[in-house]
Image (cartoon, rainbow, N blue to C red):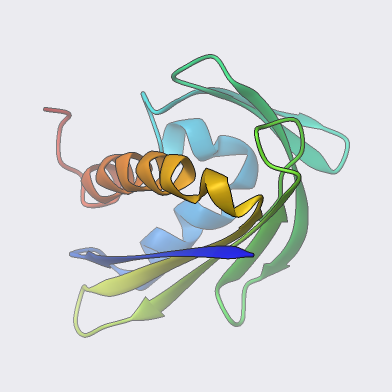
Length: 134
């Protein structure tokens, strides 16, 4: 199983970043505007439309406000197994780290998913730090 891990060091308050991450249905507005075109609830899952028009159903597995930990899975995309964890940690005054870990199969998808995650991280960092789009 391939594992992708992204660490964002953010100039933002941990509580503000966690509030955006935990807004599972608002991901297209709060974390990935432009990278994600839409997200809406369908039962216990969000349905996300990506910039390339790929649509993925992402069931919410865990939302832990104490540990600032969100876990979700995905169906309908390229992978046969996808599990992701987002965790937010304080990292000094008005700073924090967002750690995004993705496990997926088949392993051959890792370079593609890693590239998409890297692009998503650029958007998330800019958005969470309140900087305008380039």
